[in-house]
Image 1 (cartoon, rainbow, N blue to C red):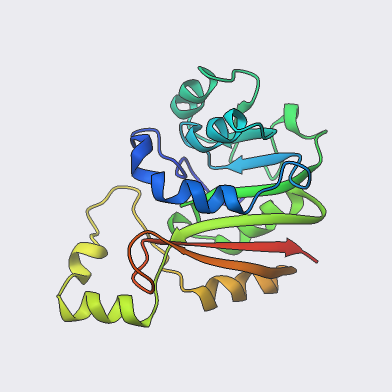
Image 2: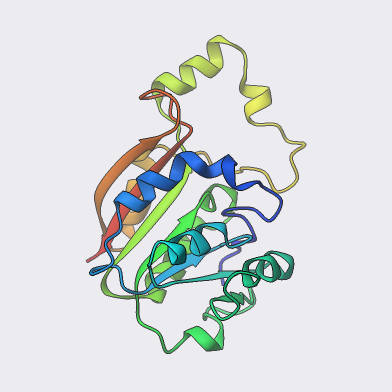
Amino acid sequence: MSDYKDYGFHTDQPAHTFAYLQAPLLSLLDKQKNRFILDLGCGNGYLANFLIAQGFNAYGTDASAEGIAIAKQANPDRFFIQDLSTDELPVDLRSLKFDTVIATEVIEHLYDPAGFIGFCKNSLSPGGELILTTPYHGYLKNLMLSVFDKWDHHHSPGWHGGHIKFWSKATLSDLLTKQGFEVITFMGCGRVPYFWKSMIIKARLS
């Protein structure tokens, strides 16, 4: 399978680090429509457990045994270790028909993002929805980083497991379209418009 790892809401990150994503993500979900949600790369299970607490039917997978152990403390029957050597979900989840896949702050870490989107696609029912969040990059934000000489800090090569892909709305939308998705929603999150920390793209499987 594609090389997604234990990112998302990381095992070592406090919950408040991702507070700016909670409300926007929640606004994109409906309990009547998004009945079976899969959080891929769920890390310590923060997002999936938050969604369960809000009344959503959510599950999570991650390659990190440590992260899954933390996630299971709240909901032991909802989290499973993902075997990265296979292109299939864990056995316990294969019979479920997921209408929604969420991957938060994962795709920027991957060598093979197209493979990851393909895995998301194969995990969804026909007409299912994929919601991705990733750090936002656009003209004004990139210009600011240049003007204030922040690129070395932003692209720090010393960060173990750091970002290796830097996405704009256009490039991520293009990847999704080529994989058979229709982009239906774009949202910027955190900071002021066009200097956002992250962006959310919601796409529907055609």
